[in-house]
Every structure is written in structure tokens, then in C-alpha cells.
Image 1 (tube, rainbow, N blue to C red):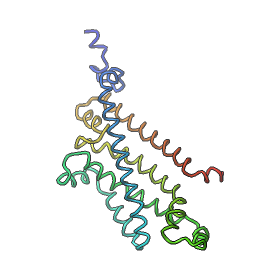
Image 2 (image 1 turned 90 degrees about the vertical axis):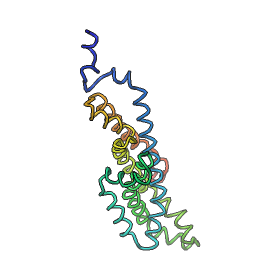
Image 3 (image 1 turned 135 degrees about the horizontal axis):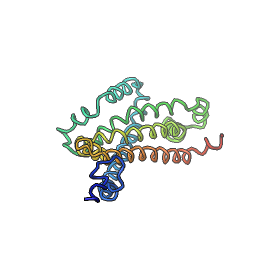
Length: 224
């Protein structure tokens, strides 16, 4: 009886070491799924955003593309996920599609900002050396746009870590699954632990991407 009285799980404390010990496998699975959903969504979003930004720039439809992406971003995540359920079912695919669409607003805007920031003198010098439009884009404009692109990826990644939790509504939200389940059962330590892990994941991802940016842009370090 004394052991039960002393159990933080029985008392339903917010901070409970016993919860970490008894549910660490469940926590690890949710944490890994959260990382997988985030990485997959940001990678796909980046792969879509770069060519989309380039096409929008070439065809002079930047306002249309950015406007459409912004409209999608304003749609509540629950509504957006629900819209795709009839087509992709109650699955992680539904969540990934929604997260990719949300990331496009940030990523496309930053790709465009990076391309626009390339100095005109640099582009003129490249053209004077015989660079065509494609070669100029691939070897001059895109490399110089990397800082802006990486800044967009950092913002999109942190945002995606947060939005992934909403996928818990359909059982594919990584740590969001534990948060929603904990809220519905008033399981305090589960809600707090999963929430803290989400914050820690967002901070860790931002630090990793910040380091990657420094590695990919050595000219910026040299300029300081």
C-alpha cells in the first residue's frame, strides 16, 4: 500500500521518473516516428520548392505561386489533413502531404529571396564568360542562394516539428500521439514528457541545420 501511495504514476504527477522507466520503448517509437515524418516532409518540400520557385521566376508568376502557398498555409491543419483522408486514408502519408504543403510557403519564398539576392555584377560577369541561363542558375545563382535556402529549411523544420504533433489526431503524429492520448486521459507525465521532447527535437534540429549552413557556406565564415 505504501509503494502505491509513493508511486508518481498513481498520483498522476506531472514529473514522473517511473513513467520514463516503464514507457521508454513507447517514447522512443514515437520520437523516431516524429523525426521520420519531419525529415521526410522537409526533404520532399525542399525538392518541390526549388524547381517551383525557379519555374515561377522564369514564367513571372511569383505572386500566383506565393499567394497559393500562403492560402494553403492559412488552412487549419486538422481540416487540411481531413481533406486528404478520402484519398490517402488514415495514414502517415496524409500527414506528410499536409506538412509538405505547409512547408512550401516558407521554402519557396526563401529560394526566391536567395536567387534575387545574387549580385547583378556577378551574373553579368558569368554571362561575359559565356555562361548560358541553365549553367548560370546551377553554378552561380543556386550556390549563392544557399544561405537563404538553409534559413528557410531551418524555419520549415522547426515549424514541421510542431505541426507534426497535430497528426496525432489520426494516429500518425509521432509524439503528438502521446500528447493527444495523454490529454484525453489526463495523463500528466505523458503530456509533459512528450511536449518537452518536441521542444528538444526542434532545438536540436535547428542547431544541426545551423551547423550544416556554416559548412555549406564557407565564404560567409571567411567574410567575418
